[in-house]
Length: 450
Image (cartoon, rainbow, N blue to C red):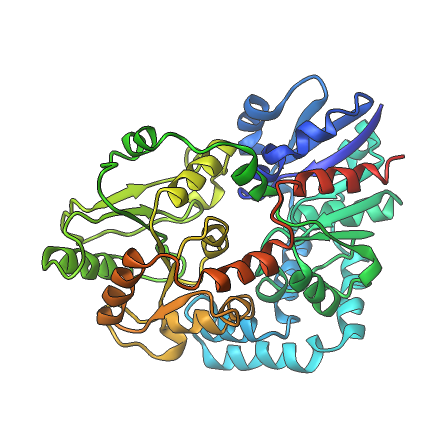
């Protein structure tokens, strides 16, 4: 049998497998699929994915060498983008100003040159550390590697070893911010898969890929939005313990990784409802980031807030390790479908919202505080990937408490506002929103096995 390796080390990529890709690949009865996962997730994947043509193998994070982790860290120093400049200066990274100057200077002086980036990749290639996938390569002898996350440390090591063994490699860029805010790619696959033309251009500029080696397919994990029906309304509201006769908005908070302001925003929201500045029967479905925690310390009880914690967790692990299943994805689809609008802060959920034609309000102020630019959530709107959204004029930014209340009321009354602009976001970010991205992905992979 022909064998391919597929990676699923990040918690958000397995939803691509369940959105149609695996079912399409399994139609080839002579194809054996080996899914590589973290060791603590092996039982989860065996339960949810394993069958006669799919094998689950795992590796431990302890297997990653210090050399590999060192190169991974250096990759962030060599990316010269607006996003990385902000991250280096903000609370998310280096609060030490001399360190910021050092890392930013490295990016500007060295990272701007393709020659330097490729030299770094060559050094990484030859000195990446011990081959942690050696036994699996010798056991299965794969003909093709499909990495679903081109920058993940495990994926990088796998791709490097595959290239040393002269095995064909395909890698996917998993997210809209991955090439501008996560460091440079440490290895160049033979072929790269991207969601849209924007990311394709970023792959040429920052990942140094040749255009002919980049395939645009759309967003496979959006296929279920078209190919699966929505739950019945009463069934959905029963699930979230809400009232189907009352208005609902979806609130995607920042999460503890990005800010400590979420509780303050909830207080603003609940105070406005209590004072009837917003509809007194308004329900707010708070979708906690699937890979992050939400600190609600000090928040007073508010019956209008409904908290939703998506994802499957793992004992003893941070929510960052959570897996997003097809069930979680369909629940998100229902949440968007039955909500009147979405409030968030530069989250990727804005793309999901547009395919359901839901108005989007960005939080553009620091709740009840006033913070410097690099400590403020305002800097999120200067990230490269966020600016692509803002250019469409398809979202509104609330710049104050009063503005937030005004915008929520405006879109509750007139949800069709900015509909045409939202269509631009769908076109630019999803490329083709037709439910066939998984088919295009499967066809592309299989074309290299014939």
